[in-house]
Amino acid sequence: MKPTKSLATLTVLAGAMMAAQAVHAEDFIHPDWANSAWYIGAAIGQSRASIDDQRLVRSLTANGATMSSFTTDEREAGYKLFVGKQLNQYFAVEGGYFDLGKFDFNATTSGNGVLRGEAGFRGVNLDLVGQLPLTQRVSLLARVGMNYAEAKTHFSGNRLAAVTNPNASERKLNAKVGLGLEYKLSEALAVRGEVERYRVNDAVSNRGEVDLLSLSLVYKLGRPAAAPVVAPAAEPMPAPVVETPPPTPQPEPVAVSEKVTFAAETLFDFDKSVVKQDGKAALDDLLARLQGMNTEVMIAIGHTDSVGSDAYNEKLSLRRAAAVKAYLVSKGLDPARVYTEGKGETQPLADNATAEGRAKNRRVTVEVVGTRTVTK
Image (cartoon, rainbow, N blue to C red; front, side, top):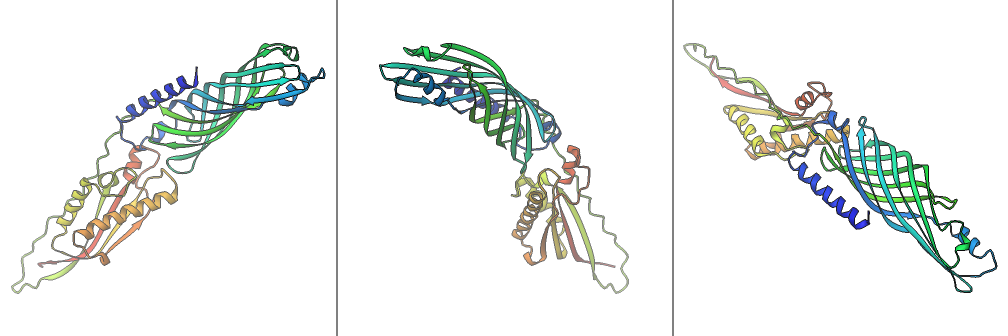
């Protein structure tokens, strides 16, 4: 496959992946699926090989000839197609097909001697891929594996006596390693940047390496449909108890407190801290229920599930609590009486091992302390 064709294939694959992804909300609510899914991918980039210049020069000048010029082209476009299986959050097994391109040289010697050579490498590989999450979206990649490559070498010119076989080919099993970064565009789609080193044989008794620096798209198959998370209904306000007033009633303020819990999805979009319209309506309903109360203190406390680092979750929970405070203040509450706290993932209500448990743990609680004037 030519580089232009491989680029077209990668472009079509990217379009298909993004079109399929548009059907789903871009969120991270199925970690159990993501950590065991099959995936496919394609990569294109630049490969670089090392041609054994000294060995070729020695062969060309062995009979007393003088080297006039020696040029090499050691860079080429390369690509790979792959399929993998996620074993868990940290490891995957990946197999694929690669084409590292063709590399050539041109040499001239005294007496109008000319030798031209070309070597190409393509084959299959099987790797163990390690993934270290740095954030919810960014992971460090490392891979180690084996590649079974076919090397085809072709020589031409009037100095073919310097080589043993002008059209040699060889298949060998060698090692390969790589490092890279992965950025998750969504739970199913990711982009990778990697550098890989392939150990190869060039069919004329040389061993060397070909490096491939590539950019790839990865798509996980079979993503479950997102189940809507229903926010638990707030407990209804108790019906006021009216007592028969004494002959001379004396209304007295009575200290009261209320606590309401909102599901984070009710107030915010995923991984965001801007109160959406449904969330504003829920907070407006809370304010309506507090009519008649002399509010002394109001505390907004944010909570998250365990997905992501502790530091990131603590900051997210605090940003969401601050967003709730900002909206309440915009409705007339005294900002000096509204406080915020971010608990991150430290106070779960349910088990974070299940999607339902994580949904319950993503929440914002609002506690209100104040007094009402009631009739005794």
